[in-house]
Every structure is written in C-alpha cells, then in structure tokens.
Image (cartoon, rainbow, N blue to C red; front, side):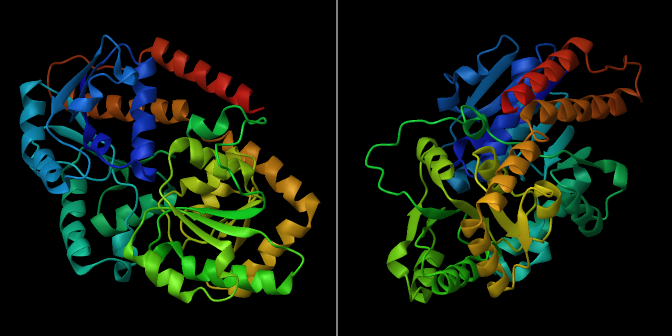
Length: 403
C-alpha cells in the first residue's frame, strides 16, 4: 500500500492532539517496512531522523507553525493534489481535520466532539465552522478513528454514521514520561519542592475555576499543608480572567504557560499530586502522563476519563468544590492512599502503549484497503505477520520496562 499521512499537525505547536499524532506515526514507520509512507508536511521535517527509513518519503511543502490560514488552504487544496500525484491508496489525517475535496480513500482521526456536546465553550465562528466541517469529513471518510468509547458514541450520534464506520483506538503515553522512572538531575534554577500540578489548556471545559476554589478551600481546612498550585498550559485571555478570581493564597498559585518537554517531565515527576478537574475529554492524556511519572491522580467522573483512568485515580464530581478539596487533602495527608494510587497508576499505564495503537491502526488501514479492492480484481492484502510480530514484541518489551 501507499499510505499518505496528512502532516499538517507537524507544523503546529505540540499540544495533546499533535503529540499523539506524532507518536502514532513514529511507531508506525518504525515497524512497518512493508508499506510505503508518504509524509506530506513542512520542509523542516525532511531532516527529522524519525522519518529516516527507506520506505518513508517526506514530501515537503511551504507550511509553517503559526500560519494557520496558509496551512488550512494547503490542507484543503494542495494536499489532495499531492496525494493524487503520488498515487496514494489511503490518506490518513491523524489530527481532527482533513481535506474535504479529497476523492480517494481516506481515514480521519476525530478526537472528540466537545464543540457539539458543549457549544457554549466555543466562539460562534469556531463552532459554526466545526459543525459544518466535521460531519462532512466523517461521512466522506472510508473510516473514522477515535480514541475512546465516549467519543465513538458521540460520533455515531452526531454524524449519523453506521457503527462499522467508526473504529475506537485508545491513545497511549509518550516515552518521555514512562522511561527512567528513577532519580534524575533537577533542571537548572529549579525552585519548587512542594506542589500540586495541573497540565492542560486554560479553557472553560478544563474547569480551572473549580480547581482554584478547591485549592483555596483545602488550604483553609488544612493549614498544615502548604503546597503551591502549578498550572501548565497554553497562554490565552482566560489566564487574566482566572487570575482576577484568585484571592487567598494567590502568591502560591503559579501560571507557567507552555514549557518544553524536559521541563514538563520534571514538573510531572516532582509533583505531590496531579489534579485534572475537566468537564469533558475525548481521551485525556495528562492523567495517564502523571501516572506514568509516578504521581497520584485526582480527576472527574465525566466523559472518557473513567474509562481511561480505571480504578487508578480518585474521581469526583467536577461541580463539587468541597468534594474536590476534601479529596486533594486526603491524598496529601494519607501516605497509604498515595502509595496505592501510585502503584495502581503504573499498572494502568501498561494498558496504553504506542505499539498497540500502531497495530490497531494498521488493522484499520488493511480493512479500508481491502474494502477498496473487493470491488476490483485486485488481491486482498493482510497485515504481514512480521509486522504484527514486531509490534507485539515491542509492546512486550515496553510492558517489561514498566514492570
């Protein structure tokens, strides 16, 4: 097969969706040396060693980080022509958007339908655009992949798709967080020792206001506890709005914005507690990243989060400030609960690795390809045993590392 990858996500800031797409493609090309991969992306990816395989070709275009309008036009108009020029069998778009005008077989990853489930969290222009584009992309695609049963159910209902058109493939945790769980040097100028951590964007669905209220309530009820609250995530106008609501303990609430990978890893590993009070998630990677880093997790009983964290986190109502404050205090004051959560978290993370994701995604590729050749005289193709075996062995080694 000739598999085309819509690499627009590589020309964007690497947040959760972009990181997941990157890890998926990296795992696929590492083990699949049978099929040809055409990575349509920005010119700066040509020298990336992650794509340095004989069966991987980087097709460079003039898309760049920060130029969203130019990149959108490229995705909608240039990418279909490039896919046709290179005789692509399947075009996979792993980061929510895809070219509407593409006439070939396509697979699109749609990670969540938050803009449908809670439209009040988004601007009128954003939700209008996505309400127009996403259902049409989903109906035109040969297959939609999503990352939780919760998101799959949303897609089936909103896009009115037959069940067999939507595949559920869980995401996984970046090796950045699972490798070397022992002691490591502190980053330069590190000055934090005792803190609660939140990682994610600052937008309404992340429920940051409730977290701040719960933090202040916990500090008031437990004067012996003096952890700071560290929030890591993208800068936005909401930062200023949230800061204005901070009253007591405001000097102990630290907004860090985006940080690089080394710092993000350090923040996770040195946290006393990770709190993720989100109202809605298509998957919710940060709680798993925290578990992989050896940190106890408190999160909410909403959307996909229960199926992701299992029994390895303490879960609360996202609307109950007192319950969240009490649960945070319980973890910080009870060493046994803390250790139990850390142990369960490391076990839960074993269920999510990128080689399993790659294996399930390859199965979707072959399913779509075979549905295409079934109406012609072409021979059906199956996932080669050597590729399946390599993915299985890599997954086994990854699980052994996590033991």
